[in-house]
Image 1 (cartoon, rainbow, N blue to C red):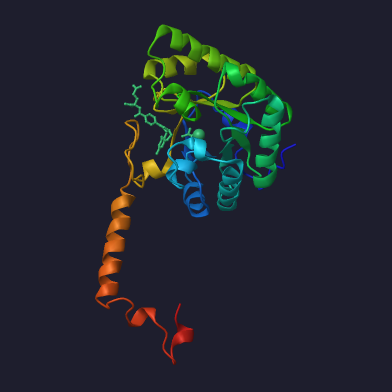
Image 2 (image 1 turned 120 degrees about the vertical axis):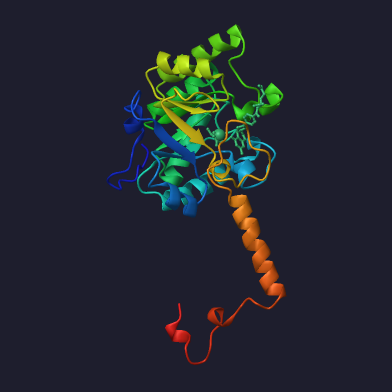
Length: 279
Ligand SMILES: Nc1nc(=O)c2c([nH]1)NC[C@@H]1CN(c3ccc(C(=O)N[C@@H](CCC(=O)O)C(=O)O)cc3)CN21
Ligand SMILES: CC(C)C(=O)C(=O)O
Ligand SMILES: [Mg+2]
């Protein structure tokens, strides 16, 4: 069983499941202790996404994520979170081969981080993996539609739900994930009307990203949401801050003050007499 940390009021996977059709479920990714501290009071769910490989480590795709990387970031986020439901992404190569491999990886993630749930990409093709992990007592979040771990197979990040055949496949995936016992499902990069229809079709909450405002919740990559992403951001992103500019400005002013010997000034050095009075 998952050694779920009993911090009293933490939101669990079953609490998220019960919010189907209610007040939208607020989700963001988080990869670090300070960001978890800042986001935890405001969100229902924090996802330690395998997007960390791209966003923080500079890999070209999420295929650069490893189990060790996910566990290290999961531990950092858990140290900074007391309230949110923390979900950790299962990285590519840690679960697809068999239900036994999926269970071993999920147990490792939950055992080493204390997170509330894991997430994996796939529908009909990964239903056996989801069912096996759930049978171990570990809650699973599904992820259908655009699946970044399939970027090479798909030949890019292609929006889903644009053909009748694909729409039917998306419904089969959503049904399979629900039937396998997932407590919720991310729908990524999917035509809005299709994501809306799937939301009404399944009994578990849908969490949209580049999907529909009708989903039961929304998620964005934190670095995108605060304007920290240095590469092009996807169309579905809204930047609620421009931290790129704030950080560039700070670095430029620091550089100018060091070069001009304006920093450090008297307030930021120690004198023989007054050091113990200073912070
Ligand atoms: N910083 C960041 N934010 C993300 O949300 C994110 C990542 N990275 N990396 C992994 C995936 C990739 N994501 C993406 C990236 C690009 C599009 C995109 O621009 N797609 C084209 C698709 C064209 C089509 O098939 O219609 C588009 O024009 O929207 C979508 C999702 C979302 N994920
Ligand atoms: C954005 C989401 C759903 C994700 O899987 C990630 O950040 O890795
Ligand atoms: Mg992911």
